[in-house]
Amino acid sequence: MPEFEFIAQVRPLLPKSEQVQRLDERLDAMLGGDEPALLALAVPSVCRDRYDFAESFKVTLGGRSQYHTELEIDQLIEAVRHRQPGSRLRALRDGRIQMFADTEGNELISSKVPADHWLTAEVSEGSCHYFYWQRRWYEIGAEYLVVIEQRIAELLARPTTVTMPPWPKGSKPKENDEGWYNQQVAAREGYVLLDKDTVHTARLRGGGLEICDELGPDGQFICVKKAEATAELNHLFAQGRVAMETLRFDAEAQEKFLAKVDELAPGHPLDRTFRSLTLVYGILLKDGVQLTPDSLFAFAKVSLLHAVTALEGMGVRVEIVSISRTSATGMVTPEGGAAPSS
Image (tube, rainbow, N blue to C red; front, side, top):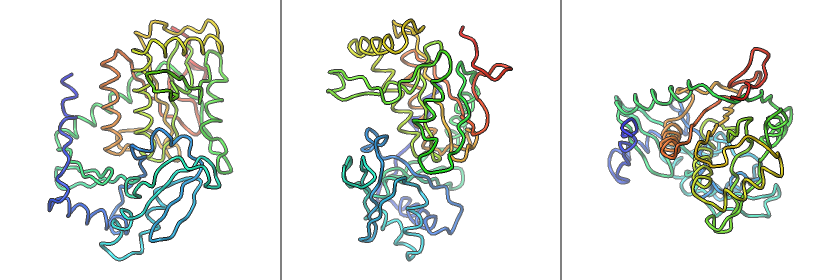
C-alpha cells in the first residue's frame, strides 16, 4: 500500500553515534525540567502481555525501592530530577521496574526491566523529529512526519458505527476503572461484554487471548483503553491486530469464540465468516483530552499506523473513538443513544 511506505523511513540511529550522544544529553536535560518535556510512560514490549494484570509496580532507583499501585511518568521524573546533569538518564538505565499481580508485591509477573524502557520521549531538531523507545533513538524525516499527521487525521475523522458512553472520573483510586467502564458500555442494548473473557487455542500455545472488550450491535469488535498519553496505546494497537489476525486465520479460535458469543448473546448479528470485520479502538486520554494528531506522541502514531496497515491488509475496517469524560462520543443519534443497526 503506497500510502504506508513512509513507515519504512522511521530510521534507528546508531547507538554510539555523536547524534545519539547529543540526543541523550537533551533527554537528560528534559528529565531535569530544563526544557519543555515531551515525555510519557510507555509499556515495554516484554511487559505488554501481562501489563493488564499488574496491580502494583516495584521501582528501584539508586538502590532504593518503592511500590506503586499505578505507574506514572511523573514518578520516574521526580526520582531523578534533582540529580546532577548527565546522571539522570543513566540513573533510569541502571534502575529496574517489576510488575506484580497483587498490591502487596508478592505475585511477580515480570522480570526486572530497565526503568528507561518505560520511558518514551520526543525531540525536534530543525526539520527532523526523533523519539526515544527502549533505549534506542529513531528519526522521522519532516516529509514523512507530514504524511503521518495527515493519515492520523484521516483515521480520527473516519465515521464510526458505535457509540461510547461518557467515562467520568472516579473520586477514589481504582474507581471507575476500565472494568467498570466496560460494564457501562455493555449494559446498553445490542452490546456484549467480553472483557477478560479469553480464548485459548493451540496456536496461542495454550495461552489465552482477549479478543475484545465488547461486541457492538452489528458485531463490531471494541477494544477500550484509558491511556496516560501514550503509555498503554502501543499495547492496545498490538492487541487489536493480534486478535483480528487470530480470528481471521485460526479455525479453532473461530469455533471457540462463536461458542462463547452464542452462550452470552444467542443470535447476535456477528459475521460468522470473519471476512468482514470492524475493529473499534475506544480511547480515553488523560483528563479526557480530545484525541487528535497533536495529542498523540510520534511513537504512538507510528504504532497505530503499523497496526492499521496490517489490519486493513486483512480486510478489517478500523474505527477510532475518542472517549469523553462528560458526553457520549462516536456515532450518536439526536437522542444521544446508539446509532441504529445497519
